[in-house]
Amino acid sequence: MVLGVNGQDGSYLAEVLIERGYTVTGVARQAKSRWVDPTAFRYYQVDVAETSALTTLLGESAPAEIYHLAAVHGAAEYVYETGWREALAVNVAAFHTCLEYMRNFSPSTRLFYASSLKVFGLRPPSRIDETSPRISGCLYSIMKNAATELIHYYRRLHGVWATVGYYFNHDSPRRPDNYFLPRLAASIASQLTRGNPMPSVATLDFWCDWGSSREFMEATADLLLNDRPSDVIFATGHPVYAGALADELYNAAGLTTLARPVPPPEDAPFRADVTKLREAVGWLPRQRAADVARWILRERHSITLRTDAATRR
Image (tube, rainbow, N blue to C red; front, side, top):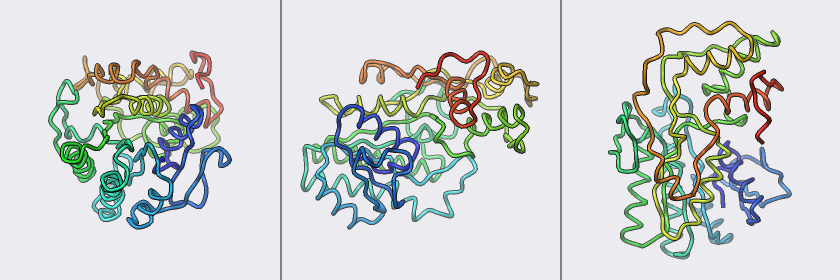
């Protein structure tokens, strides 16, 4: 069962599981599937924030695995204060509903929860691993950390198989327009085609570890094959300075380089330790920021940069 199947991650995960021969149940609020072939899985229109509706669906479907990818979240400028109740209902309460279903009716079910880099604070440590302190620096991280505490509580007291994946930034052609990589790709496409106004990019003065949503979902499915639940960081381990990334892509497109506010720093202020991810799933994400941006350009704008390798998907 994939909660949030109409989102970027939920749709890719459903496709991964279908390709592997799973019987997949997808759950979302919309009337129909947005990305996934509706003939390839069972789709249910359910608001996961409604406890009774979700509990009924869990009982009827009896899933062997539950992936909680439903979330109220947004890009950097999103204000959670205005949608706090809805976010709490989806990001925490719906997850607790799944835990209670497992405790009361299905102890053999396995449960995954998607968390975030943000749980390690607004200024994360220079080296981030699964033992790094979780520091709630915003309302979103408060909710994600609360769900993680629920996992640890239910594992310790009730022996449930539940795990958390700390997702670093990951994008795809299905990511909404207001995220950085889609905006950067749209900016390049606009200048190449002159067909649309060029979207603005707020700043290029930051570091980020970007991966591919599709690859993260492949690793997520692999994680639930382990004998024991294991909390894992999902990242490439290769942070990129946004200004340098923009330079690379603009040069590949034959365009004038975007002006950066400051020269790129010598090194990233943080780096993910992906040792445990490699141990848990046996491989590491291969696509990095430039690869994902090129993927977005190909699928959303039909543009292949001159330095682009063969299409990966």
